[in-house]
Length: 115
Image 1 (tube, one colour):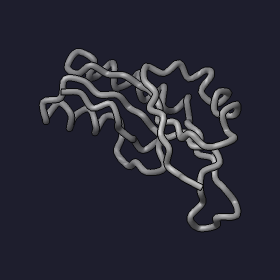
Image 2: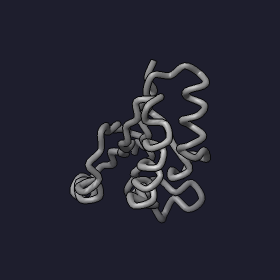
Image 3: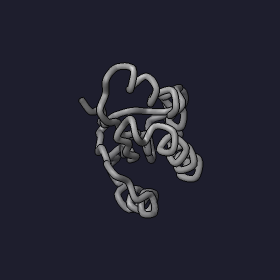
Image 4: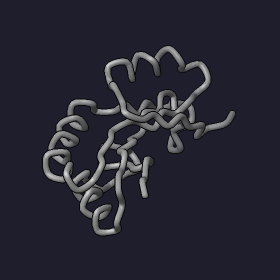
């Protein structure tokens, strides 16, 4: 079994380290996983709706953590790294620029906010 929708501590809604996710995935018999932290531009700010938020990926930190888990768990688990990209109206060009140098294995396109 594969799970291609996993958020780490690099995502605003994740808390687990990549290493923890790998260990738990192996314990639960997963064959492979893909880390897909959030990239959401112009997202709704629930605390202050008049001021949207940008949730960027820290590509350097994610990349460093991914290399580390590949070294540790690569022989035990198929590992991929991607992103969950929020598809916001009017943000296509900004989003393309934000993921241009990401070189993801997998992208989830999601609509999180309507209106």
